Length: 324
Image 1: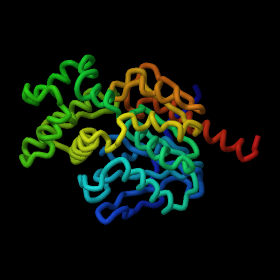
Image 2: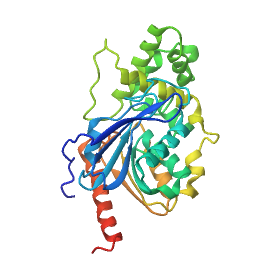
Image 3: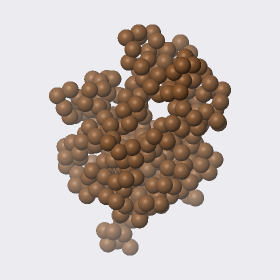
Image 4: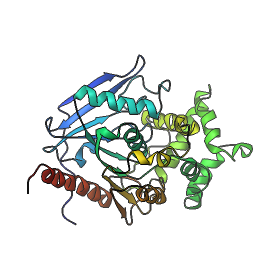
């Protein structure tokens, strides 16, 4: 398949806080070639924030790489703020970034919940999206959420799921998402932190990644708190969508955008069937099911597919510019 390895580590040539509302300022960084092909990286979660390794998917000489921490997480401020924090605000934040930098059209690179945000942005601003590279498709519908937090992944990781379920009293176990949501937003900080720890460690254990480090039992990371609280805030509120199948029901708006999709066959966080359902409704889509891997974009097999997509885009752009 060619030598599609991660690019060397780079630092941003520019990073800043961009005010996006009276409450929120988001952390943005720009890397690579300031005059290059613009591409925006969307992190997952919601609530995970960006890591340095995300910069390394992209050829820094070719791409103008934009990364940002979504509201309430990472370096964005205020940390953990849930007011004015939902997927539609994030869509408008992306527009504010695009206009701030002065980009006409860009490519979206996104995985997991990032794919949800990227698709939602494209539905709202299809004329601003040149192409999309998506990994671990998450349609964030009722089936996706139930699979993860109620029944589905429980069949594959029964011991881990039992620990997740048994933290909640039996009378509340028929709706674990609601039960955890209540505890996350309880005034009892000790109970909240115990619930967050159980939630986040469950997610780490079922991530199917060779790179996941489970923190020590006695420490709770800031990133675990933001991931748990923001995820629960979004999922409990049905993503703040008026339509539970928001993406698939609005697919007409984006069906002709060139979209590249990679999904791990053994991705237990986001179901491979979602990638198939999405691809079936698109006219200009390349779908690669990556055998033997799970959810993480950073495993060797998955990263090679994603980097190949990005290299293919370079070739296509070269031809589009009239070069042979």
